[in-house]
Structure formats: structure tokens, C-alpha cells
Length: 390
Image (cartoon, rainbow, N blue to C red; front, side, top):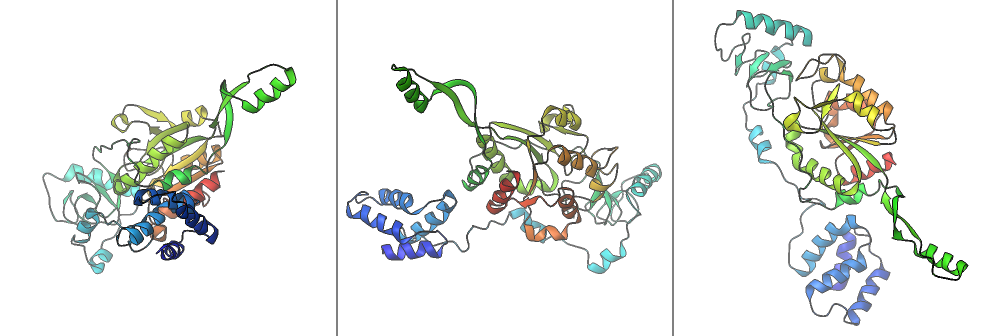
């Protein structure tokens, strides 16, 4: 049974060795764990697992071998949000119908045209291709389809093609006290550590005390500052819109970051960074912080981390007045470049699966302006990002 357990661990990718297995057998021979399954679990885990990243695999193998639990297929469990399944059932226009719908000629033309339509239209309209209404192919309105439209009065995204959103949109802050679903995020973040002794001398310096006491001939107690992680982090979090699908994942990251970094400052933005950001989503209209103030307040030794799906209209990145929520005098790419130039140690964490990045133009654009430093929000992606930041 124990040999089968050892082989199952190796098959699951846990790097166990014969020496560790023999150590476990020696401990069992000396009755270290007694006859309790729980004690044996902790003994075998302490003996066979060298890296916290392998604890989840160990747990699954242990459950299969000793508790009769079925192993889950693959390394990670797969959970498909119910909302995704509902979206798949929506009625879509055929490829031929979509091909017949032409864009109006860019963002400026869209804004000019909607102003004209507002003057001409006298009432509610549904199912057409011109007026502001619902369930049609007009560029203006809700619950329809157009390659480049302005969304008005619709509850949430449907096709992610709107280049302007004229609604009051309420977002909520990420909860940094959420119970983590996986310890692996913390393990990956711990790679970004630089310990230093700063502050008041409150910790006993045992080596210094012994050395000075021996030299002086009497007890000479020495103290030193506590050793802490001196890394400073600026965390920019995309919130709202398509990021609603990734709230749980980002909350776990946010909670882990708050626990790991003593010097952490966080700000929110929507889709792309512009001239201002905010700390509280409930006050984002009244308490915005100019991005210039952020760059002048926090020195260039801060590590800059963006978290967002980078999924938006290319207008939001490339042209002035491209934001879906306000008129921005300078394009998003200008502000993104300024941030990256100010903070040379920067990375972008994307919750969208890496194999899907090529299907969205805006993700490629953001990755370009980040100079290729975009990483998937996975354990391996976090590990690679932390190595980049160090």
C-alpha cells in the first residue's frame, strides 16, 4: 500500500525521492504517527512534500489512496460559470447577417451621428437599423448587435463591441478579507521579497549579544530592527464590465497581496488607465486621484502590477476621447507608457486564458505597450511575473 502511495505521488508530479520514502518508513517503524490516519497524513506530508505548491496534488493522492476518494481529472478542478452557459444559449445573428452590418466610420463619426439622431427621434423604437432603440442592428441602443456601437440603457455586456457606454455604472471594491481558495497565490507572491532591517531596534540580536559580551567581559545585550519585506508595490486593478467574470480570482490575489506586502498601495481603473484613478469604487466620481499625483508621490523603486483582462475596444487604448465613460484628452496608450517609463519593474496579470489572447486586438496592444510583460493569472504566470519584477 505504501509503495502504491509513493508511485501515485510520483505519477501526480510530486517530486518525492526514495530517501524521503525510507525516512517515512523509518518513522512508521518507530510508531511516530500511532494509529491515527490524521497523524499519518501530517507525518507523510512533512516527510514527502518539499514545496507548498505541491500540497494540493499531495492531498488528492492521499485522499485517493487512503480515503477512497476519486481523483479529479487534470491538475486543477474546472468550474464553468452558469452565466457562461446562459450566454451560449442566446440567439446570435448569422455570419452573413453580421457581414452585412457596416461600421459607421470610426468613433468621431459615431458621436456625431448619435447627436443628430437624438435631435430627430421623437419616441421609443425597437428592432431597426437606424434609430436609438432595442433588439436591432442600429449602432445606438441596447440588446442588439453592431460591430461598433454606443450602448445605452443595457444591463451589462453581451457582445463586447460597444465603443461608448452612456449609463451610470456602479462597481464595487474588491474584498481583501476573502478566504483564499488556494494557498498557491501566496507561495508565488513570496518570490517577490527583499528583506531589510528598518525601524526601531526591538528584536534581540543574539549573535551580536554573544560577541559583545565576550569582548566586554560582561553581559551586553544588543538589539536590532525587525527583519521585514521591504518590497513596495503599486497595484492597479481593473474593475467592472468583463472583469465581473473574474471577481473571485482577483479577490483572492488582492487578499494574498495585502497579506504578503507591508508596503502596498492599490488603485482602481476601468479597462485602460487614463488621467485619473480611484481607491473606492463607491466614490469614484467624487474622489478621483490624478495619475500625475500617483507618479509624483510614489518613487520609481515601487513594483508596478496591473491586474485586468485587457479586453476592450482598441479606441480606448489608441485614440483621444476613446474611453467608454468620459472624454479623455490623451489616449490610454500615453498614460500606460508614462507609468511603465516611471516604474521600470512592471508586469500585467491577465485572468483571461493565455491561449485566447490572440483573438482580442486590445490584449495584443496592451502586451505591446507593456513590452511583452503580460502574464496569465495562474500559478505559473504569477511565478513568472514575480521573477520578472525581481
